[in-house]
Length: 268
Image 1 (spheres, rainbow, N blue to C red):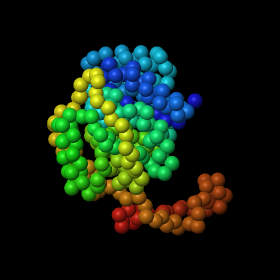
Image 2 (cartoon, rainbow, N blue to C red):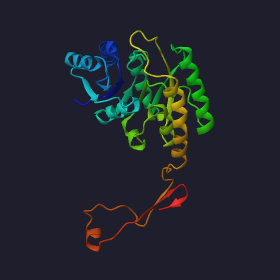
Image 3 (cartoon, rainbow, N blue to C red):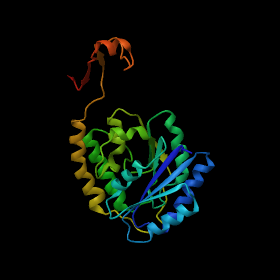
Image 4 (cartoon, one colour):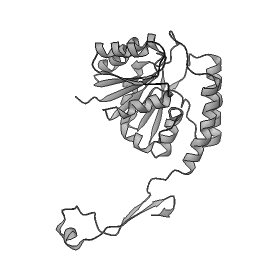
């Protein structure tokens, strides 16, 4: 049966967290009567993460495991999971148990009034370095891109799967998904969520790949947004209506229909 939501979790050296994570995600969605599948993506871990993923899959067939042969990064792991989702709604969260799976049903309900819902960690249980680097990155995004999301680095999100067709796949997209989704014309809502201290494993992110790398990517995203084609403001057709291929008049006369659309003021 097709699930209502596909939850994608990227994992890198998170062996102790895999089984409790799977149990909590599925239990939270079961409690809300939401049919689900859980896609765990092992991003080239050097510990027993993959072994634990296989154990989770054995306990519950709704768990699906995917594995990268080598570490490719968080964005690549998410995108691998996205390509295997079967539901029309996709949820994401980190594999370190700092995001609370119990928030997923509440975020899913908000999709009735928007296209994407992003968690905001009002009380972050991180060390000072991660909090400071995230604050600097937020200021940089506002200055360079002219948009301000309170916590675009929070991976606890729920969104409509159709949004993926308008997003470019690149290393670092997980930091900019809300910004790019909004730039593509979709509606994004921010909702407060819980955040817990890490109890097992260690963070895979240092100063460079959280702060330095994020600012480096900022320039690329700015370039992309400046050159992004706008959604058609108006469509003009040379025919009263688009006829189906079976229309006898079109079939007999070989009528051609030409459409013009305005992209950023340019007719094509």
